[in-house]
Amino acid sequence: MNWGMQNRMSRIFQPHDGRTTMLAVDHGYFLGPTSGLEDMKTSIDPLVQYADCLMVTRGALRCSISPDHNVPVMLRVSGGSSVLKDLSDEEIYNSLEDAIRINATGVAVSIFIGSANERQTVTNLTKMINEGERYGIPVLAVTAVGKDMVRDERYFSLCSRMAAELGARIVKTYYCDGFADLIKKVPVPVVVAGGKKIPEKDALQLAYNCVSDGAAGVDMGRNIFQSECPSAMIQAVRHIIHDNATVDKAWEMFNTLKSEMAKK
Ligand code: R5P
Image (cartoon, protein in one colour):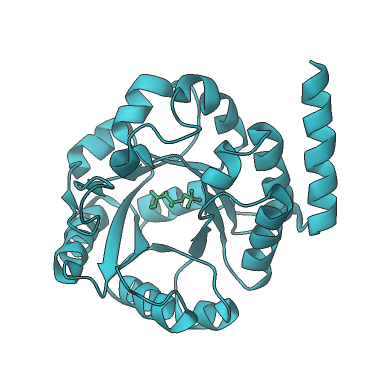
């Protein structure tokens, strides 16, 4: 790995433990004004200090996130279809040149394995990998779930291993039964998406299960920014990822921070 690539990976994954707490706030690229992200300047900018890396679109960065934050940016560069259409019909919408201008630490591309647009999305990924490798910029492959796909270890292993074989430096996928087996088959760091909002303690349990089974961290969105106390939630998730806290300890931290904030 060249120095630039290694340096960028070390910004995303903390060198002392190889883990990351990524905050995913890129949902607007297909969902528009997602609940919790309507006013990102107010809701997200204050959370950035607790994130190891921010997964975001260039528009949200420009409008809502202060450039004074020293946070590594994982820039979403694939998209094109709204939630009203076939989400797998994606292209690369953000050039690597613009990603470099933004000072992105990495770029994220979705692949939809098993969908009618499988080849198109895999080509999006490999084109971006070819460019990213030239400039030492890691590409994160998001294994978006193709229509009618069974969300099991076999499917997520297929998508994740393909992404790694094609050159993705990081894979983002979903947690599933048998996740530890998936980790054994994927030779690059794997981060896990949080998915739909679930009760806070369940989301902490999910983060705990992910790292216990070998994930290099989470790339969590809705379970943080739609939490009743997003700042407490991201800090509690961090506690699990970086301090190996138990779910009970992280839950205690969440409740303590939440009541302290309620007093302010
Ligand atoms: C997928 O790539 C989306 O854009 C989000 O980044 C992803 O779903 C992670 O967010 P959440 O934890 O809300 O699922």
